[in-house]
Amino acid sequence: MRSPAFFSRSFLVTLLSAALMTFSFSGCATMKSWFGTDGEETQLPADSLAVKGMDAYDVGNYHEAAKNFTELLDRYPFSPQAMLAELKGADCHYFMGDYAEALVLYQKFEEQHPSNEAVPYVMYQIAMCSYQQIDSIDRDTSGATKSIRDFTKLIKAFPQSPYTDEAKARIKAANEFLVNHEYLVVEFYLRTDKDLEAKTRLKYLINTYPDASITLQAKALLTKIEAGEKLGFDLSSWFSGLVKLPDWHLFSSEKPAGQARSAR
Image (tube, rainbow, N blue to C red):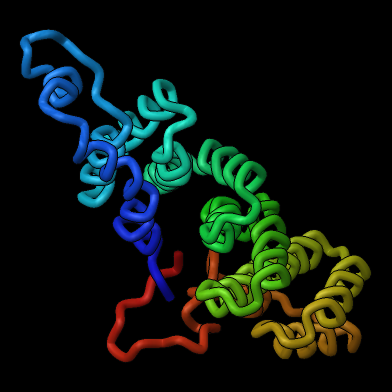
């Protein structure tokens, strides 16, 4: 799985090649004008802003990088470097945890550059903006459902992309989150003596998520409820160990030995 840095230096070289060739033939007068060596305050050219932005981005200074990319787009919206600034500006917001803004910028890039080679990556990041907002299982589930939708869209559009395996794994993790949420609702019904609602919810869970990790346990619980057993003090044991979001690496076919795992 290639990291988001895949579209950093290599992508920068492609986008800046024409601009840098022009720069190399610009002459001393232009050099003075661009970089202020004549003592006058001047604006940085698009290629310099792009390089400054990438330098900051590569060391994790996303705030400074975003500032340079925004300035580039404001001053040179039609320059060869503008596309780079659009993409990396979205990345900056993503890595700063501003997922709502990052989502808007990724979607704008996809709409404006539908044939660009970065589109599979952009689609992956669109899904990740929702995935990163998955909350605890007793709260909002929209992050999980939206990420599943967007990861599925990526897989259908680019089944051979380098993001396919990870997208599939994250879909499975998000599904596990959803089924755990459904199972937690069952606990609420049982604690409020609504056995009929609990049975209905368990049947829905079992039929909708037959391959989920919790399904066998859900079947066993349903059997006890249908038999009229009262769980009493044993109720908590049936719902212990539920996690916010399972580690997606558990569902991936790419598991490098000895590599640290992260739930995100």
